Amino acid sequence: MTTITTHEAKTHLSRYLAEVEKGQEFIIARGKSAVALLTPVRKDPPQPRPKVGDIIGPPFEFPESAFLPLSGSELEDWGL
Image 1 (tube, helix red, strand yellow):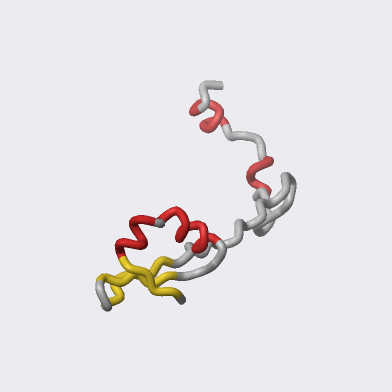
Image 2 (tube, helix red, strand yellow):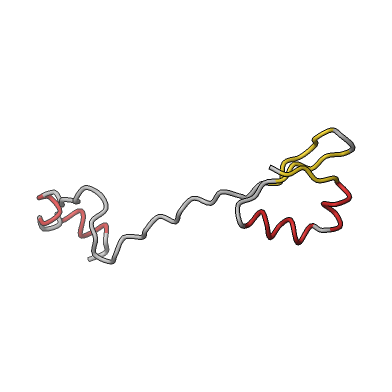
């Protein structure tokens, strides 16, 4: 890990960022005191999306009552 001064960091930020993208880390110091760590952001790999039609959860089962005819009061509620 390389130590750089705040002046170097301001002057050559683009160069240091290019190095950070390659995996290098820098300690930024004010005088002889370390004040910050310039390090790459770790990204989680993207999760693969399921394909259309893939079952990703437990199967849903319709209850038998879903297939029964509507009662008279239910038909009235629907205005039928």
